[in-house]
Length: 247
Image 1 (cartoon, helix red, strand yellow):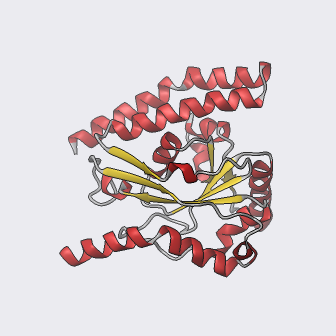
Image 2: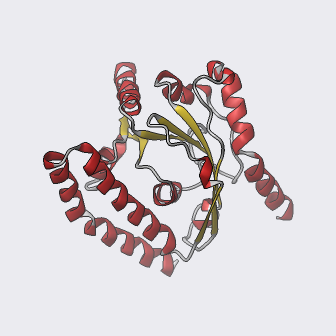
């Protein structure tokens, strides 16, 4: 628990230290344009993500990195194990990534500004109209060549296994006609969620071949959700089942 408190304090200090970089990113956006600013923000998020993960003593392996799509319109579809999924993705993928964030995060100082800086979208569920507006904003982000991460389970795993993928979560990708990049996240649950204290773990990102808008399965939401589940979940569910049997 002592290490968890020290790590949390260090993470808070790290966030404070990013303030000058945040100001530089907005200045670059004004004088050099969005592309230059986004490259700078991507560099900052890579450093932030790697520091957040490596400071716990964890090790990261990226498998089949060559499968990562270079398409401008991109949606990453990933399983969701832990709060550490986001720094793992931002630290070890070759694109600036945005996320669909809960509207409650708007209330957290500094974090809310960074969420906006990486072209994330705050999902406002206060009314159906507000939710649709948030959805359309995310679609426009993707159409402008930005990458968005979607966790189709809808919440973090409670037992380490991968829950069924919700078909509705894929509408963002299909409506934007984005290339879908399946990614398996392995090991982040062991960093905190398993024991509610921060500890080192062996992490793995598995980059699967992308699914293209012209692929036949792309036009059937049920089949698409099932296929993505079959691609992403097997190794995770095998590990979760083995752990359950050993307990």
